[in-house]
Length: 465
Ligand code: ADP
Image (cartoon, rainbow, N blue to C red; front, side, top):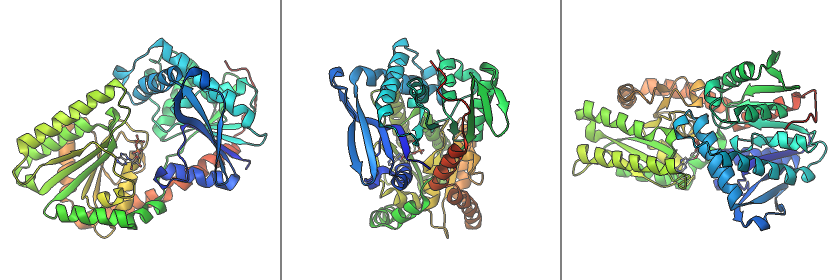
């Protein structure tokens, strides 16, 4: 394989251990190929200052970064990426703000990325573009004459055709996917939505081997569910910080079973629904009340987008009312913490918990589910309660699968999870870990890049835009 060039909106510095599984896995491949990571520097500057690419070396990996002007950042990142694509792709048409100015900014930044990236490319580079911020990047690159192999991976879900069709300019957006050689999704259901959309809206012809032909080009598409770096996580779990966290939690909560939720504070995570299900569980099972505590860690996220402040207030008020109505002098049912837990401590928290509540309303994959499983003591493992609407549910069938909109059903699953006998917990955990280990982040990287190496669109350099 030639040099790998990864492109994403944000660059995670592979030298920092806090970077997490994806950055570590990508850094490994980048290291092996002496590759380059291209993306936004994280800096917002005056329009007149957006010019050169900043280059930095992180070992054998080259980091190439561009700044954005405030107007571009607002329209591209806050506006189109997180005010249109994020809500619609998570099935929340009601939260989308289809301001016409946003799409222009989205296009401008993709054009800027293409213009800045092109001169840095070599003939035999393989380019891997990540996520919804950069869907039209390959089309912009092709318009400038780029003929290298380009793959795209969508980390978030792809909604059904008619929901996609609600986005003004959806045909332009999906047409842009045909500029890639390979398009990867998290789940079979996302792939199915893609197939149905392009066949019905773009009259694409379905060829063999998961290829579709439209707009004079052929694109390969597939499902490549992302995983975690199990080894890295197990090492983290055995480390001093995780062990300290585990022991402190065990000491503090020795009389109780812990339930845990760890999420970004995002409306797609189903946090209010989770709280209502826990409240229902408390109301229905008074005898179990003081023996269970739910720890909900919700890290701040996109606080300058309005829908995020709404969800924050809703969650605070629900937690307050549950504690007010059910709490005792020596017991509070919910510990809600609006913060990020340091990554090195997370496995300790997971391991000390009997139950994880991973109940998003919609999620591309959800890595917390896999991290929780990897952190368990296999002799006495905890139970995963998982939303059927997380991409992970296609793989993690031995979890207790729930519909997060069904308050009573989820409350019943919480009860079952807390009372599950040891033998059944072990059996489920073993089966789940087989999948987590097999489909880890290295499998994901290798299988995507392997498929990209095979995928060769027949036509190059077609006019796109
Ligand atoms: P998303 O990418 O939508 O945030 P995922 O579950 O796929 O959801 O990935 C979240 C990642 O961020 C996981 O690695 C998880 O450990 C980490 N994370 C999420 N919330 C927190 C938190 N409150 N504190 C620390 N880490 C968190």
